[in-house]
Length: 230
Image 1 (cartoon, helix red, strand yellow):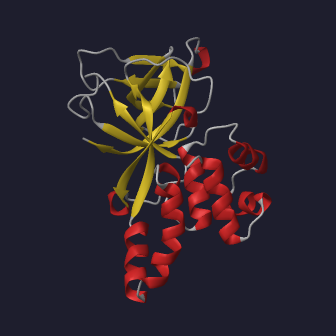
Image 2 (image 1 turned 90 degrees about the horizontal axis):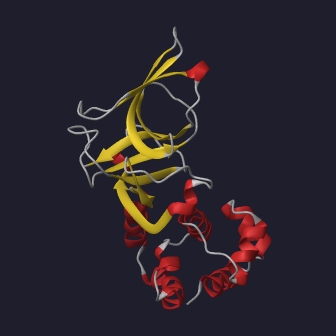
C-alpha cells in the first residue's frame, strides 16, 4: 500500500486530522499534506517521527504489507496479556533505530547542497541503547566508511554513527566535507594559533593543517562521531 493510504488509515483509527498528526509528530503540516497527496517521498527520519506519534513500529510504513499490519496490530495488541505487552514495549525501547545513508565517507561525494536526510537509504540500523554512553539527539545517522585512511581505527565497510551538527564540539572523530570530499577524520583544534588539524590515522594518507582565519578551501562539518561499528 502506498504511504498516503497508510497515513490516512492510521489517522482514521486515531480520529486525527492532518493538523493533529503534524502537532503530535513534529512533522510540518505542509509535509504531511504532500505525503498524503503522494507528491513527495518521506524520509526515514520523518517516518520515525510519524510512527512514534501513532505509537506503532516504523516497519508499518516500510513493509509492503503495511495495510495488513496496521489492521492486525490493533487486534493483536488487544489479545496480548499485560506482561506480553510490557515485554514488547521494553524490547522496542531498548534500541535506537538509526537511518543509514546511501553515500560513503572518505571516498568523495561532493558538497551536499541538501541536508543529509536526502541521502537516507530507507534502511535502519538497530543499535542497543547500552551501546551509547549518553543519550544521543534525534539527529543521528549512520554512514559507511570507505578507504584505508583511518586504519587501524576504522576499516573499509565499517560504519560510524554520528550526531548531525555543523558545530565543532571538541577534539574527536568527525564526518566532514573538505574540498568537496566527504570523509571521516580526527579533528584537533589548536585554539592559540587557530589551527584545525584534519588527521588521517594511516600515515600513508594525507593529513591537513588549516589556519581557520585564512581558510580558502570549503570545509563543512557534518557531525561528530558517537560510536563506530566495525
